[in-house]
Length: 411
Picture (cartoon, helix red, strand yellow):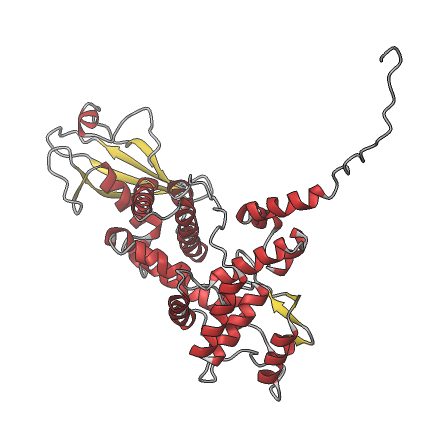
């Protein structure tokens, strides 16, 4: 957003009141180190000229004429510019965007998707952003360095309306905006010419990142049916589902399990790559004797560093493409008679542990999440269990007595 100077040059009326002079007026800030000025010529029937200035970081600057102002002609964005067109043209020229391959938002999302693949992250974080920009080609094809707070805020507001119309929660919008900002931040980290991070920090910010309590937890009877139907559909898929149901781990964690991670009656479960995690650590998670035997059979005779769980065709589970799990689980859920995603197994496993009296801190560690997130997401289950525990500390009932002693002075 332009920072206004004392001398106004944004509209034609104010500019035509200025006296002709060689030195430009205004020099309004249009970006970090960038300013736009206006030179009024002696011939009052001729249009003025837009002058852009860029600081060199050493106290000096470089200046460049942008084009004519729309003092007497309609702005065409080519030779004659209004203030906003001149500001955008100045950013293009002074940032050198016209001399190299365009760093558009579409390109930024593509780069973000490749980065997620390289880190083993969820590619859906990028595809969801691209999907919700499909009706905004003017944003997709715009240089990241030219994105403004106002247009990003308009897109954010339209996104909120769309989610509300489709009965999606605000927390879903907040998570999508995190991915959106990640795509833009990646572009800025790769191109020093992009200096407008404030545009998306402000334009895409302001939403409360709420975490709605989980209430769609499946009882053990339904979880058992899910496992049975998954086995019937495909043995390899069924084994993947068993691990998810018992450990509560994310699919991305389970897919990274190696043969060496099977240790007697437990799994050395790799951590997720959520947030800023880069180094994968492992934490021991207990499993049942039945699951241990099943995993030992598929691991027998294989290299320690090979994947523990394989697809039915012998290949690794391709987690960047969630269809390998989403589509078969949708079929299983339909057979069982529920409308759930595979994540219901994680929620159910966490709640099962809480209600069994496992300390919340240990549940959080085994589920590779924080205690704060656990308390936010599973609050009512923790409070329910906490009340049961608290009752153990209540004073026992005072035993009744048959010896009645009269008070002095009383009959």
